[in-house]
Image (tube, rainbow, N blue to C red; front, side, top):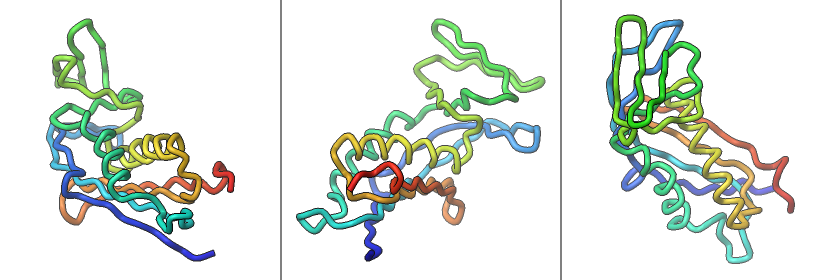
Amino acid sequence: MPNRRITVERNRLRFAAAHMATFRGDCEPLHGHNYDVIIELEGELTGDAWIWDFGEVKRITKEIVDPLDHKFLLQRESKLLDMKEHEDEWEIGWLERKYRFPKNDVFPLPLDNTTSERIAEWVAGQLAKALQAQGATSIRKITVGIEEMPGQTGWYTVDLDASVSR
């Protein structure tokens, strides 16, 4: 089978967000990144000789990542952070550090950590669902890179071969 792929990246596929990832039982200080998003699709050509339309991939990805822009990315499944959801705010703690964020400034992700690798995994899952809903049955793999800064990118690949009917 020929190996065909397309890539869309950066330009309008970016977001700025704050987080505090956990590592080895510790928690980073609150900080932020200007994240760039890189998408690669592998698959067979459609009847129109496309893997999928670049513009449509960009549009869908932008819909996925735009809600993260200028938010605090909360690792909702963290076993280390102390979190309390209130009516209008999130209270988050780590040892002596305590934070209160207005709810509309927080994007709670269903993740155990807000590393680039985990964010890439979440984006890849959202993108896979959206493309499959549009009938993209020729796509075999979706790879997402979340770049925190130049030279530091976390990657995740979802293999759709098992779930795609040809």
